[in-house]
Amino acid sequence: MGFANTYFEYETKIIAWLGTLPYVHQFIHDPISGRITFFLIVVGTMAFINELYITIEMSFLQKETYEELEKGHIDESLKLHRMIVQDDFHSKEYMDDKSGIIIEEFEEREKFFAKPVHVAHVYVICDVLQNNENVLTKPFKFHLEFSPEEFENEKRQEFGCNLRVLRTKLYHLFKDTELYHELNEGNKYDFTVSQSINIYNTVDDLLPTSIDDIQLCFLKIQTGDQIKCEFLLEN
Image (cartoon, rainbow, N blue to C red; front, top):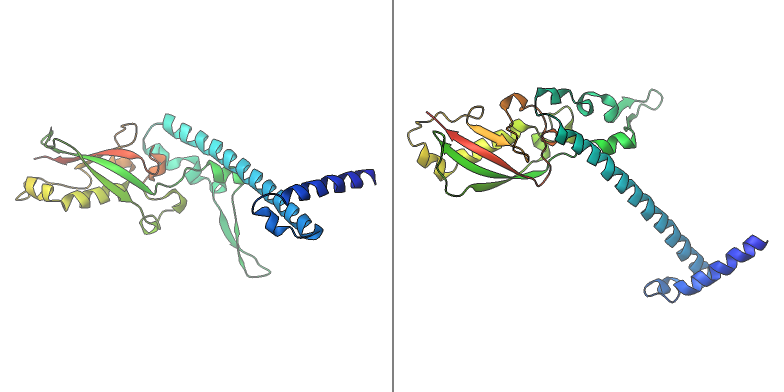
């Protein structure tokens, strides 16, 4: 009884204090409403602390992944990155024999948090090289956004679109400009997706066409990053 009496004594004091707080006081009319309000505040605080812990944990796990990618080399071996090829990093669906319902089984929380986030949009600083000479006094910028339709055919859709999508977007955007038509009047240059566009990531690594199948989040590019591009007009 001693513990119960002590608890109710402190509870009464806390509820009385809550009744003096702005906004909160309007929910406290009697001991029952006071206890309900107090309970909701306690539960809400616990939920907030839990979400804060999960967010911090997620940040550290993702930070480790991005640090690993930053230290790695940009080559075709990224196609075999463990987060792409290992199924335990991804959810899976199966049919329940008894109920006939399709059940989705999610990956472990640590594996989910460790995965890089797909690239939603980037800023691309562009130069134009005509026979290896820069023809611009000031580079221009494209802001590119990526929609789900552009990576719906990827095996791992949660990682977003691949480098080929970015390269193709840049190709069509530049080819539709007045500058391109002015410089390539009469189609004297063979301007192609595979040969005429150099893309550099945030650490100035050249991204070759041999890795066009790799998704952007594995190529040291994150959402909102500013990267570089060179359009090559060569005979």
